[in-house]
Image (cartoon, rainbow, N blue to C red; front, top):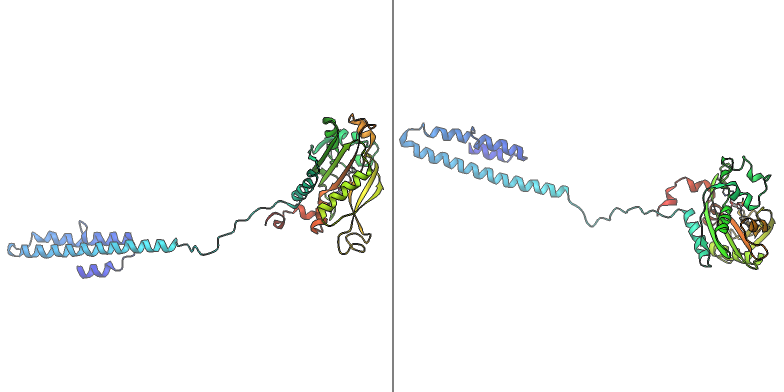
Length: 331
Ligand code: FA5
């Protein structure tokens, strides 16, 4: 019996097998219990000797099984530890960190530049009335920008704003002059998406109202802004242009800062890149919001956030901003 037990005890792999083995030898109907039952049947003279013999076997079997159980327990523990072993010298898994999207970053940078010279940030609704978006801005009924082909109409007089200029109107209606504001936000136009157009894009509007404001103030402000945004020392070129809400109105170019300036492709060989619309606030706009144009003047400008971000970061296609490319969003 003991030889058999010694052999089997070494083959036990887990607790279940151990229990089966234990009951085979020490259980109520096990082999050693059977032997114990034989004791009473043995002749009286030999009973004591046989009893002691059987008890020895039982004791030895118990010891063997106890020892096997201890071994089994430490083997299981060792395997558990091996399974859960961690190499603390390995480099940790790096957590991905999100990054401010370039468009948000651009808006923040522009705002930081202007907040340093006292401008406040103001936002307005993306769903606008035609009065705030066009009429108050001196845009006549016949103006092509009002056309259904250019503007998303929600109802008769309700549209998705086509520019950030209605924020000027809303601010002037609720605030007394003087004022200096910057208004970033999304605007909408029925433009086919291509490398330089999107039907939903972002603009930043600037408005400055004070006494004795001239084109000189506008030019100096834009030069300062573009120098701080693009770096270096930037020059601006004001080209006369027409926007109904300014007089005089300008398209503003910045001097080409790419591939050696003049002759560069980005600047179409002219040495200048168009970057802004601007002008002195039209007296009719001032009247529409209850400001006296004899006392107050001002300048306004508007630029495309995507366009200036593309120039600064060398992004060739505007659609890249909206494709959720992880390189735009992660570090
Ligand atoms: C305006 O929207 C005027 N409100 C700007 C202005 C403000 C002029 C104050 C005078 C005084 P314009 O339509 O040119 O102007 O648009 C301004 C800028 O928005 C453009 O220079 C361009 O950078 C950007 N832009 C225009 N259309 C799109 C488009 N579909 N996708 C992306 N950017 C566009």
